[in-house]
Image (cartoon, rainbow, N blue to C red; front, top):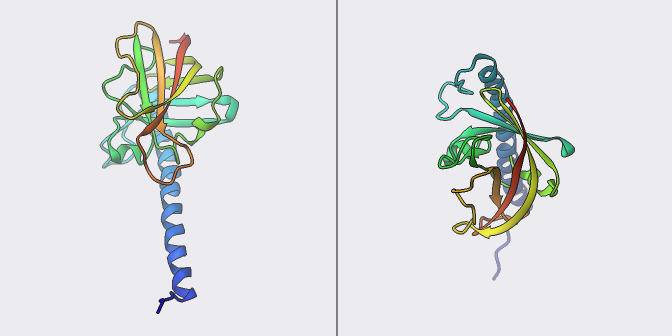
Length: 189
């Protein structure tokens, strides 16, 4: 004899699941507001400004793709807690504008959701928390396994990599990553 769940119970479960998903997106949005303020204060003062008193990370850069109206504040590090609030600067990589690869990673369904709309040829602006501004040209993208990114840490140029999970519309995590590569075209220091 099959068991059925009553419609009110199904409705309650739906509301709870919807609320959980909405909470994640609301937290991401609010975090970016607080991170914007901390980033602006860092640029103005030249000091590290934490976005809230208990934060174990701080803003290090702002990424913008003006063609699509996208902007995100990048945090130092890629711990699970940091990535819940914004893109993270992968610690083993250089800072934006330095020789080598500056790599940033974020979740595909929040802070790097906009990567699906970035086209090869787009301009990506990065402003560091010290006020230095760098302009990059998106020149390639690839889908790779998480353990085989193909990123060469020994490059001699000034490059930028933005990484997120793939595919963009997946519901569960998987082994593939989307990598967007860009090369420096201008530095305004």
